[in-house]
Length: 180
Image 1 (tube, rainbow, N blue to C red):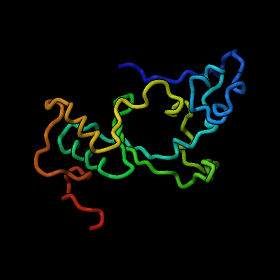
Image 2: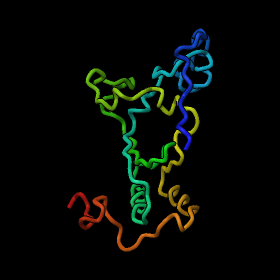
Image 3: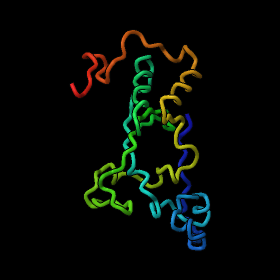
Image 4: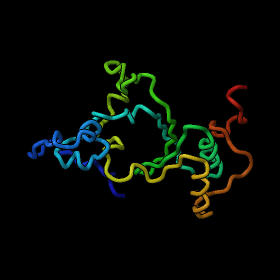
């Protein structure tokens, strides 16, 4: 298995930073063309970003193997502002597109000094804006996209659902609506 692609940074480069010579729009939003920004000697930065990392929550889920797991993903994708993706390492995630309440009107963190550990540990080099290559192996933003994918998958690799769909509790209790 190939290691994930990492962005090329020019931190220790002897090349002089020439980012100020770039067009104003690129100086204000360096992530809009990271290739030109790096070529000018710049390093990955949050400057000019619209806080991409603060606009979603992603939770790892099991890779689907059984029919009921495919059904669960289909169900998730029937909801607004939900996506499912497979990262470069082959891990599956459900993504909830939701803006962090701590962002101010200028997309800056209003609780920066007290931000959660997950925010402190986030490295700008891993941001999809600065990444090299595709951010995901696969990404589904709608139930229809997922159905198209399932239609292309061979029946041997996609078990059919048997019986009723299971809840997220893994079948320990009957499926119930959270409101009941």
